[in-house]
Length: 539
View 1: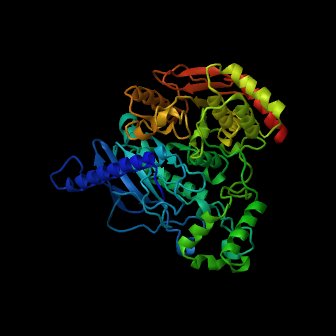
View 2 (view 1 turned 30 degrees about the vertical axis):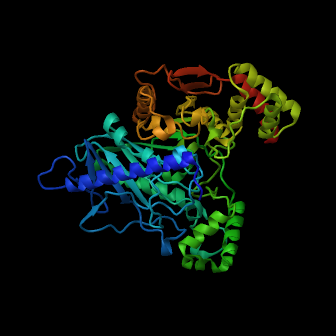
């Protein structure tokens, strides 16, 4: 792989961070002597066995904690099974394996925070950060579902470290690894093979199993199993959205935060079965011989799954996911669960092939027409509305905002907010993140993932993505306080913020997240109506 200079510098930065992290782990281990107080590994008795973690300041961390049995061998493509447990004390000082997935194609500024930990089929593990062990505390629990769509990612990214949230906001943070890609979403239940009748949505069932672990164990870490928030960005937001419609997850969580991710509808059983048959054919396996898939080396399955354009994701199978979650209406399964949901102003600048050359009017017109998939006259009208509403924006800015507006990141989150609010009785709190990063010459603007450092209150780890201006911490303080207030009470209102009103289909109250937070009623209404008039004709 050829690295340009920017990618080389960011990779070097990552290497330095890895070295520093390794040194910190060694230091913590050295400090684990009978006379040590700082860095002494605590031991917690879980339902599966004792685990020893590490300590940094007042926060204890436990990494790579198993919550279910291995999915290798007979467990491949099956729902997660109970872990048999272990005797003695298990060290949980390092990240566990991630699911075998392709390398990320995200912008280098975000990829640099990926630790790229080893992968394997024994990947059902989680990480815990807490400032209270056995103190009888009833802290809100925040369970993180990582991004990467339903195809990749892991909970091991540096920007997913829960130390700051646990330390500054007194919550318990849990990050979950689970199956994705072919491992989590190869739908074998429809091929007529008795051995795989339950092989459906197993990646989502992994997440349910992790929430059951939280229910059974989190009190030992100072958390409240009766106050659990699932939150996630991009694919993680889609997983949160999918959980909202899963009967098996009901009662295991109590609030949801979907950041730039939605799941309005799921894949049909017929389409998922065709995908499974096509995948088996690529392995030269007939459906009636499906048991042979258990003997295929995992790297062959991984490589074939990534070499062809398979559609991996949740399937509306009638049981684990009984209906489309937000189509035509919001699922009643989670009607009582408050939801925070939002998107970034320029989600489209996430794409690695995005060009940033200035656009003249003619080129803007052509690109807008392509994005809207409409004729020249309708595209011209939409562009004129955007120009009128944003007189200071360049043509390139207008295109990037429009491209983001018509993407699934915006249309999906908007649809879910509207239908969830219409359902009631739980509130919906909507946000629109329009802070622009100065990195990469400012080209990335308000890109997909730019909100993560602020929601996690960890701007120092994310310098490659957002820069290092001193005022960033003030913004992170406000945003993270709102996020934790929502996790604690189901309402994000907190000190330092303007009043954050619940969203409804009439007023459409939306919090604009940037250095100067502000509430806006029905923002960019004319733009929304103009583009929806075009998009509704394509539905």
